[in-house]
Length: 178
Ligand SMILES: [Fe+2]
Image 1 (cartoon, protein in one colour):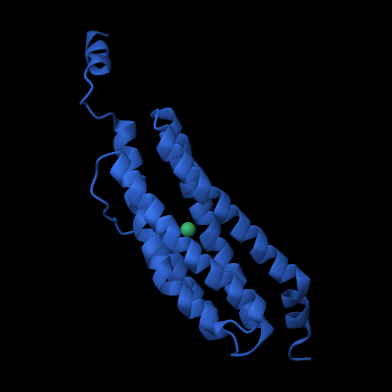
Image 2 (tube, protein in one colour):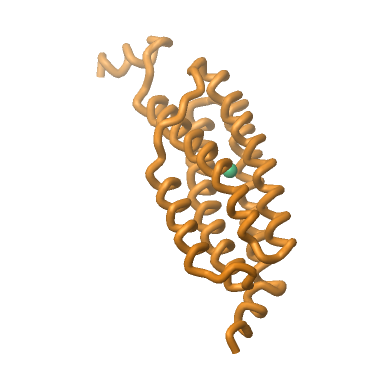
């Protein structure tokens, strides 16, 4: 009991949760930078203009999200640095494989890109949701607000991708090879 009290009164002492927050922040920082490198290729490989512009727009957003993460690092007084995110590396790698397995110029290609992009978005949504909640628990309101902004963007990208799939991509892909 006494130990716990000591912990509470020591302002400099880092809690385990704060360390978890830092680790998660480094993970998503690496993940976003990795994605920023992969998105141009995904956009270039897309068949439809709609999907291409959706991915290009998300690249611009991703660059802003990276800058936002750098602000969060600044707020907690930690130098911005990434820590390799195996999950994002795997998701991007799997996406590359899906692109290679689908024909250039086909709508099935777009359906594959959308599938892989949505898996990536869902990973990011989970990461930012966790980070936002941790920031709130740690009393870091400004950081929580920045993370919430990115979370909202990731969610709206996910919705846009569903719209592209449902508006014409899946149906066109379904008639390919007939
Ligand atoms: Fe992102």
